[in-house]
Length: 348
Image (cartoon, rainbow, N blue to C red):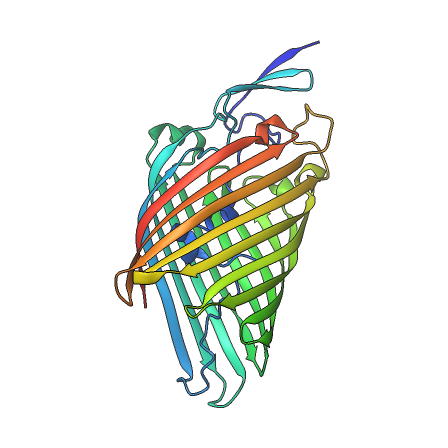
């Protein structure tokens, strides 16, 4: 028996709506000011012992973007789920131009002029507006994200430890008013001035205002190696991480892993090239929808590169390209995505 089903908006409470995940933003220059991912190990406070006790730095980014698949939907407007022929009224892929604004502020206060201990904190924000007017049907015309973090940092001889408490809020599409409270811990060991080992982990509790069944605990842990080379200080980073989530309903709980690599090449005449690649595998504890039998499994490939040109010490031009391919055993989550960004950044 074949049954036809129409899915759209909030009318059917099954896991076939397309959610934005902030992770896709973090490797693009347009959103680099909006936060750090699990592999980021840039010191937010300089290690110079002669520096003043209070230090502050940050950046503001703004520009234009083009997203080939804002809705993160499949190419076709209908699909097959078990015995069901499903029409995706609002779920098919939609492209859009847009604008973005990203902000980042990092602060540190040394406990004593010679102390290895610092109070540290960060405040981050991201605002994005999509120009495609049809996206109002899916409430995805705009994205808002914010984060506040505070904690302690130890900067000893050959070792660095950073522990923070953080709070985040995300408002986009069907993920309206999602809040997260958690803790982060990062340890860096400097084998040599150019070779560093990093261990990174975090745990947080998320609350979904519009879908309490997704409430749960999310965690990640990873290990990374960074190598600096060349007179210009090029950087190569490679790592492996593991993540998991618990939720009130099985089809929102998952575990997985990610392998990633990122490089920074400092080129002549003020140019910087930063290619990146990652592969993520996520296995869910339940099917994507009530019409499917097999548990959902996603394989995500991301490839991209960022280019920056320094106009002076404070201003630069940045451009980026990011490609995402998700190969899922649920056709609702099987899609490609291309994102282009071009903007200015002011650092202080």
